[in-house]
Amino acid sequence: HADNDTQAVKLTGEEVAKHSSRDDCWVIIHGRAYDVTEFMPEHPGGPKIILKYAGKDATEEYAPIHPPDTLDKYLDQSKHLGEVDMKTVEQETKEEDPEEQERQERIKRMPILEQCYNLMDFEAVARRVMKKTAWAYYSSGADDEITMRENHSAFHKIWFRPRVLVDVEKIDTSTTMLGTKVDMPFYVTATALGKLGNPEGEVVLTRGARKHNVIQMLPTLASCSFDEIMDAAEGDQVQWLQLYVNKNRDITKRIIEHAEARGCKGLFITVDAPQLGRREKDMRSKFSDVGSNVQSTSGSDVDRSQGAARAISSFIDPSLQWSDLPWFLSVTKMPIILKGVQRVEDVIRAIGAGVHGVVLSNHGGRQLDTARSGIEILAEVMPELRRLGLDNRIEVFIDGGIRRATDIIKALCLGATGVGIGRPFLYAMSAYGLPGVDRAMQLLKDEMEMNMRLIGCSSVDQLGPDFVDARGLSMHATTVPSDTLGLGVYDPLVGPRESKL
Ligand SMILES: Cc1cc2c(cc1C)[n+](S(=O)(=O)[O-])c1c(=O)[nH]c(=O)nc-1n2C[C@H](O)[C@H](O)[C@H](O)COP(=O)(O)O
Image (cartoon, rainbow, N blue to C red; front, side, top):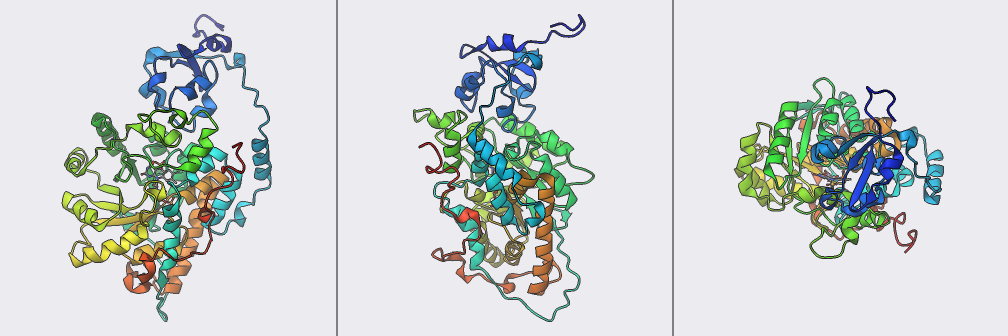
């Protein structure tokens, strides 16, 4: 349909629909057609999900999983077929999915934002209003999710020793992380696929972090492109990069150099995921839609794990090792932090290797199940570093299960520089967008100020091991109050009861 001879001819939906087989496959994404025939066998998510949309508009399925620049980066220009006249494209008549109808009803009845009084409230709301696949992806932990539950319940094994009759009229919750002064001792940690929960994705977290002057760590597996998230920052807002190391070091080098050039102030190399963990809630929910090609494909040579993120993450280099670190230190001036360290011996090795920090973390319980919580590892690490006179050689962060300001205070008392928080901000963003993230951060600030006052400290530098009794930390037999949904065993939303099994 040439509107006039100067305008490029637009493809019609009918023409695209003719190319709908494995040997001749076109798809429409964001109003443009692409020939993905040759690319299909290399697609990390497998050919099945592409075939599901062969000859059709794949935008809705594609957008949450792939940063916008993916096709420009990975599909040869000759396969970019040009604009499609979307008026001629038959939109899939969405037969009324009863589950979706129920979800829409729950959204209409969801609590107003002001009824959320703590971070767990966002989890409770998100579980009710999020799409099943998004909830499953964000909420899942590895295997029996024991570590995911332990991450938060470990904090219940630490008791405060508050002091009294101290002037706590003015409370200063600010601190410094990797040379950046922040208003609160927490950062927004890297969590993949932000658009599963919110159509705008990670830039919503950027705006929330800016408002509260806290740092955001950008995930390698973001839904938004790296530059979109960096562009969403304002003024001197500080961002860090979380890096999954690619088997192809040239790609990794390009990513690091670009991040440094854009002003990233920290490089967090994820070291606890040489293979992504087995997250069964995620697998279960994805099994129902074709995206989980990696599960349904038989044969041992195929990634046998959960859905989209694992499929996209087939590039991760499982051979990454200590002897690689000098190369990273040679390619960037950014401080380098190892994210996912889980024993004091490796912290000492990290100091010897010349890196600037570690995050004591088990990836939110999404990797090795029955690994210890970040807070328990911290209680092992810091006394040993102090004994060896190494505690000022490195910044030590923890993440995992931080849901209250008292969790943050306990981590700082035990020697952490700061803590990373993941799911709560994802749930707040997914349920209420930016206002949700804003309220979640404000709630933490209010809790922090009150609890500092009650422990008898007016600034974070006064916090130390004498304010806590952590002797119970290594006892793993304790029952814990079931104060968060995450303590439930399996999520009935995607369990056998509700699925068609
Ligand atoms: C919740 C969540 C966490 C992910 C995450 C995605 C989600 C949805 N993803 S993942 O797809 O590979 O598992 C990442 C990631 O991209 N890279 C990473 O270093 N950590 C990843 N993490 C771990 C995260 O950085 C923190 O270690 C963890 O979230 C802290 O625990 P809480 O969620 O309880 O705060």
